[in-house]
Length: 248
Ligand code: FPP
Image 1 (cartoon, rainbow, N blue to C red):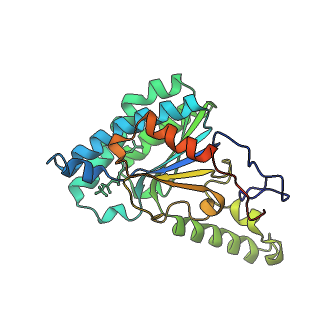
Image 2: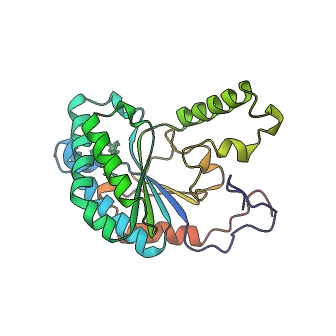
Image 3: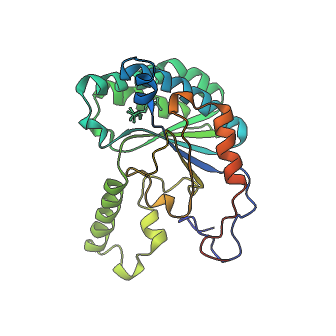
């Protein structure tokens, strides 16, 4: 299997794979969950944290190696300031409240996205959690924060241009694997399954390159209602797919 997700040779694919090594989730529908109960939007986010806890546990138990969660997109800054600061508070609260347990369960915490826009105290909490869990290897939990796939690709293009301009890389040597190695996900297994909750059917600038060969699964379940059963349904969908990577 090459880094870009397609098998190195046709016919060598993991068509028989049952559990995705790398699962990513666009956690959508918190606002609608709250509106359906006449609650403020932030109540949906608070409940969404419970779904994060359940899903991290269930994904680890199912044998998923990497779980990537889209927690805050580069477009989410357009939300009202009060909602943004509530989300930041939830994130730091989640890390504070869960770190011991995550660490005890062998979870390694990672992030993708540009953290420079976050308050120093939020960044410090995240950095400390990443450092403490760096040696764990049961499940890698990747939280996408201020992440946008196009910005990630622009960053990779810039890195390649810099290396070429400095004479360290021949333009002819640039291929899919070389570009892939400049992405933030470079050292993670290829994305196998991408789930989006809440019935919306779009990628919203999430892992666009990585999703090229991923199985896509859209469920009407709102994120705060996502539970082990919902995860099992997504995993069953994946297990039932024959991935052909363009072959027959
Ligand atoms: C989408 O629902 C959800 C978000 C933008 C935030 C997701 C964040 C969390 C669940 C909490 C933080 C996460 C971690 C990993 C600790 P929406 O508000 O767009 O819902 P709507 O489309 O129904 O309005």
